[in-house]
Image 1 (cartoon, rainbow, N blue to C red):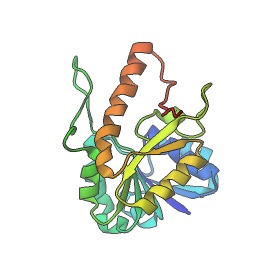
Image 2 (tube, rainbow, N blue to C red):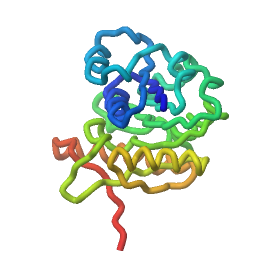
Image 3 (tube, rainbow, N blue to C red):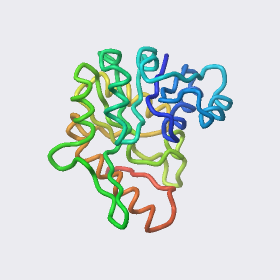
Length: 214
């Protein structure tokens, strides 16, 4: 399968390596696909990896991963072209975070709206599934914790698309919890704030969420 990743930061690179290890071909989309920061990733990922601009990456993708900073998300999708992502599963890894000096981290959207819902509006003909937004990039693929595999909370409007993403999560070593339609992102995006807050208080980023059942 051809995986197109929109965003060339650590999150996109980590997920890209995960897909390559599963045997998929991966293209990372960037405003500067030839940048020096992507060369180590290309060397590590090997022959199944490549880079391109956002439009070429969107056209290439069977499944797309949206892994941009929130401030650049709308522009990245405009460059990619919503028509190039139509009818495709788009895994939304973004969080609409606002970081201001000497102020607590906050969400740009929340409570009555969410980044996931906004992405779905920007991509009205795509099957957007929110996932991988509640953990750091170091543990996105094959997370290993003493308490067993953590859970990835996902949401989206298309049931078949959520099954696809559930399979990806399982292959990456995660359990999954379905949080309903894309409006479930109103719950999942604040979980990122909780994840960051715990990291700041403990000075450790080796944690993830798990839903316990009895």
